[in-house]
Image (cartoon, rainbow, N blue to C red; front, top):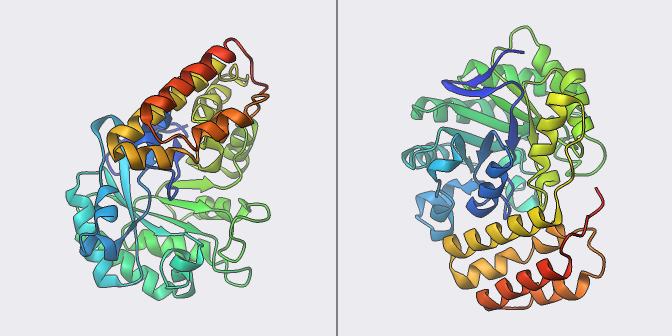
Length: 333
């Protein structure tokens, strides 16, 4: 297969993309995903209004690092003027591309006409995209869904129109906004976008990639240029390695060892402390422990300690204790 490119960014054959996930895809998590083979990553989505107001939380999300490249900054919002200004701010932060979030289904975003909410106003979606493309010198990409609901799955036409105003890649989640994350992702319409003879840009598929076998099956069945991985990577950054190995060999990579899990969670923790400071780094890391140690027998008391301890050194000691207690244990795949 040909190398997938976004503008001048070469991503190889069927790249694996880390999905932009709120409260997950921050620099500490991106670091460990990059270690295990993510080809292209995105920041958490950033509010256009927050960037314009110079809100500290929004500005912090602009932080990117050389080892992450190629990386895209993703923005969302409902006002064209604000989104154009935010795109310029994002580009000035030095990413490799700027991505527009037209897919977030949560009420506080979509209910205000941002994220997937804009799927109810396709002309505005196209106009906003054109304004951002015209503002940016970097490639502009889009992440979106099939439509607002089952009666408005216009993604084939929408993708074509967005390409016509200048986007250089599109990632499509195979659900409508009405579905949220329920039901099964429908990749057949993603495939229709890919095989539309007018489409020239890369088309990435997203949704329900939960195993290496499914990644290969969907790549072959639906013809996408790459696969975006989201929830399957949470607590399992080695999922990228497993998918790549299966794509290359048709065989399963050995499961992540317990030692690799401990090393990954420790790296994630240390990066979290470094980037966010002790207090916030400790608190925001708490959501990850259960995922990293899933399948570990008798882990509940240790998890309770990890999510209640406040002192970074105490958490380091706890991780060392866990490492010693379960030394050599093989967690079932």
